[in-house]
Image 1 (spheres, one colour):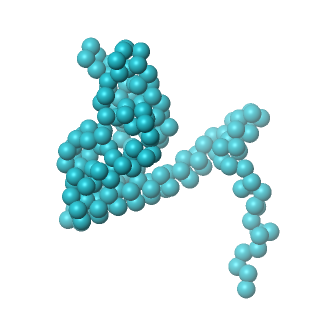
Image 2 (cartoon, helix red, strand yellow):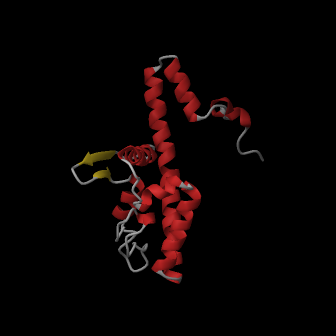
Image 3 (cartoon, rainbow, N blue to C red):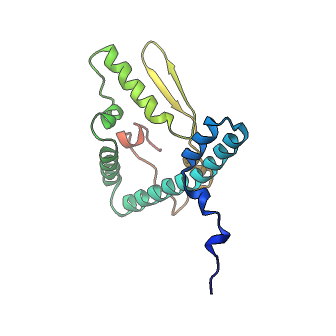
Length: 171
């Protein structure tokens, strides 16, 4: 017994990616379609993004509980080094560049890296430092609001500042 016939599903609408559909709507000036597609992209992206964050947090917490916070830091660092490679990772270590131009480039790289994220960022500067403020991440904040950390079997928080937690403890 066939539950769904392919003729019942408009398969043609899946031919192009959402981004291709969005680009096409922009090019032809379909403002309403652009707005609708942007809403769809956000709704489709969020569960995948949140699920990945939840899965990674769950795995790291399990690993830390079975081993130690130090081992958890090692696996976090290893994952970031593999993902970011070279200078992309070095920027989070706090290694300062030799010249103001190199430091500006490092700051621009970090801001560019975080600009893709679905949360806003603000950059402030004073005489001593440039601070990049990431506003609450949707997934991270949802995990926090759902109480997934502070329970008997909850996720583990970092215990020491490290590159994989942006030099913050209790993150």
